[in-house]
Length: 330
Image (tube, rainbow, N blue to C red; front, side):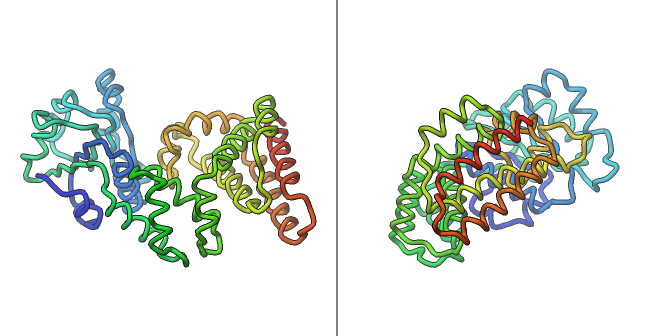
C-alpha cells in the first residue's frame, strides 16, 4: 500500500510494525534519514546490509544470513540497497515461505510500470513510500526542529541556511552539523553564520584534517601551505579532529567478527558514502592507543588555547595537524 513519506517520518509505530517497506525515489537524504530512524528505534537488533548486485551474484550468501539465527541479538533487520525489479522474484519466494525478519528496500526512481513498485503498492501488508525531492517548507521545518534549542534562529538566518543547502537534505545535514559544532554556545549570529556556511576554508580544513589522519605527509604539507586557519575557529577545528578520532575509536571497540563495512554501517551517525574511502585509509593507520593519545593532546591543547589569549592559535593548530600526521605514521 502507498504511504506518504511525511506521515511515516512521524509514525514510528508504523515503521516498527511493517514487515517490509519499499523506499524509492531520488531523495537520497530522505532515504538516509529513514535508515537512521529505523536504526535508532531498533538499537537492540542486528542490522545486515546487502546490495542487489551482490545478492544476485551469490544468492547463497544472502539466504545463509536469513537462515542463521543471531546468538546475541534478539532479531535481525535487513537493508537491501539499490534494488530494482530484478530482486522481486527472490523476495516473493522468501515472503511465501514466511517472513522472519523485517526487510527495508531502498531503490532509485521507479516508474509506474515497475513490477517491484506495483508489488508493494498493491500489497495489503507491505508499504510503498515515495521519496521525492523536498520542497522549501519541508527544509524549513527540518531546520527549525534541528536547531530549536539555539538562540538567534530568526527568519533571516533560516533563509540563509535554506539558500545554502539548495533544497538538498544531505547538504542540509552537513550544514547543520557545522552550525552545531561552531556555535557551541547555542547562540547564532548572522555575520558568523554567513561566514561559516559560505567559507571554502571550512572544506579545505576538512581535507587537511583527513590527509593528516591518513598520514599522507606530502599532501598534508601542501595543504598546510594553502589552507587558511582562522584563529577564532580553533574550537571548531579541534572538534572536527576529535569527531573523526572518536569515530575511529568506536570502530576499534566493535566486535572483531564484523567486517569493516558492517562496522561503518552501524556507526551513528553513519559515515557518508563519499567519505568511506578516507575512513578506510585512516583505519589502517590508527589503533586504539594512538587515538587515545591524540584525543588527550587535543584536550590539553583546547585548555591551553582557551586560557592563553596571547598565543598564535593558527600556528598551534597547524602544529597539531603536523603532530597528527607524525602519530599516524608512528
